[in-house]
Image 1 (cartoon, rainbow over the protein chains, first blue to last red):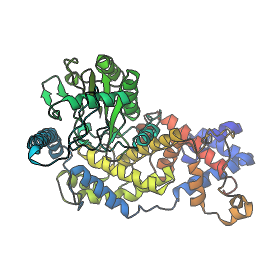
Image 2: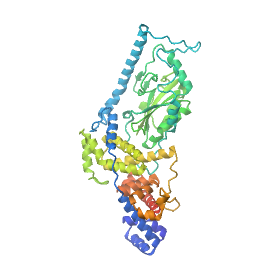
Image 3: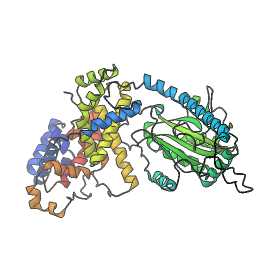
Image 4: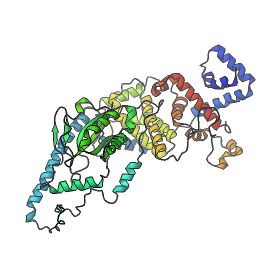
Length: 342
Length: 197
């Protein structure tokens, strides 16, 4: 037996996985060849060392952190004990109820703002300075800063955006990597949302359109049909960020494609002249579960075609009529693409 | 006690209890597996905080998906599979974010890859190596330096005792590929550890 063959088959020899003739030849070679014998000895030492690696105990805080994470997912406030979770029934019921409840809350909020504005003359409010002539911009009452910014998007916005840009993409597992685990349904993983900045033009346009409305725009108007679910995009300055944004589209991706799906969706929107609005991650902060984008309306069909290249938009999720305006302004369309692993 | 390839009866009972809504069942599952999952993540990631994050992530994923767990493999196999995937993703994220760790040594066993370099010159002195033959620490250092795609195989095979067949099923590659990849990784470890073994 040649040394090269012997070295190639040392593991098999040590595992007892060679037939008797080959094992005999290997044994004879190891008796004669000091180099291969030394390799066999040190290989055995390495394997023995691996078997005897000292045990590692999980830090005590792991249990507490798991409980907290599960409690957050359940929507329970005090993480007491994670008993049997209702991963299917109760949670799916909650997720089904969530959107109607949010819509009802949003309607209440709008009504209260409207009531407040109607009732305002009875309250002494300092007169806002008039808007510059010719701009057509009306300074909203009780809005100290009428600049077109999203909530919280102050001077830190570029930093947040660059942080988003730096956030590494999840790379799909290479061949030979373990099969990914089953992913949770996207609807059950409402989580962290990050708001990315809009192009300056889009922000200004949004602000102009909002300011011309007599009443605040309805935050989320849902027109459901069997084939399409359309949501008028909420004015971001008045609503919590967890409301659905724009037209909701479910995108089925394979477990392997999940990692980079969020980035690819954002890139597709940018290629088509749109912008990334929001990235929603699961509670672990690792997996992207939804991406919200803003697009010029004519780019909507191309965007849907792009989605079909990234994954598969189930037929029941395909908007029947993509011409229905669903964006915050006339001429723009907003989409929230929910990533579902199938 | 459950074995990697075994029936996993005690854990199956816990899974059953979890499905039946028994209070504390998931706590019991975490308690039964947390050391193993954390140890794997710590050895894959070589970072305590990241290993903690990852272990939390693994159990959260398990909590979400236990209802769909069919018990075709032992629960520990399933959990470690999740852990392996998550850790590999995290390692790739690190590499794409900043290539601060440099290229992985070649684990092909041809002797072309960089040799294991102990952290400090002091530690590389033969007398020191001879003095401090703490194989655990030395092996952990060497494990950090092999390709992550080989590292998880070594950890699951030689540390956790998974069979080649189980690994082949997990990696979706033929058994022969698992064998040869593992052998190359072990030979690379052997070369790295040459002064110590």
